[in-house]
Structure formats: structure tokens, C-alpha cells
Image 1 (cartoon, helix red, strand yellow):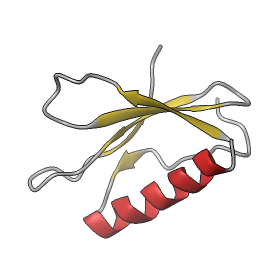
Image 2 (tube, helix red, strand yellow):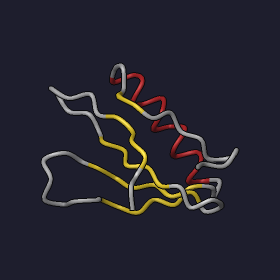
Image 3 (cartoon, one colour):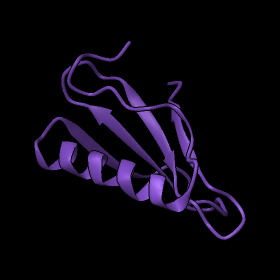
Length: 79
């Protein structure tokens, strides 16, 4: 369950512009100290997947960056 400060939209990105918009929001939350960036989830994966964790409630998300064929998305992490 996420808190009021860290709610992120879960699901696929609709476009590369949508990804950039969400990524900007995530970067703002990191800069405000609300989210912590955990680095690459699996360096051997063909996709760039980064874990972000809320410093208040502990909720984590996995953010998959888009490439030419895959739009990426956000999913709630299962620890």
C-alpha cells in the first residue's frame, strides 16, 4: 500500500512522451527525498529495470525503460 506522497501510476507507458513525463515526476520525487533510487534490478536483463522505494511507507516499484520495440512500464515490486 502506498502513501499519499509516493503514488505512481502502474501499467505500461502509452508512448515515449508519456515515459518522459512519468520519469520527470519520479526524478522530482527522488530530488525531494520522497523516493530512493535502488539502481538496476537485474544488470543481465535486456531491459533497463530500476527499483524505486518510498522512504516513508516502503512501497517499491520497478520501472522498465522503453526501447525501440517495447514501451516499458511501472509495476509494484514484490519483495
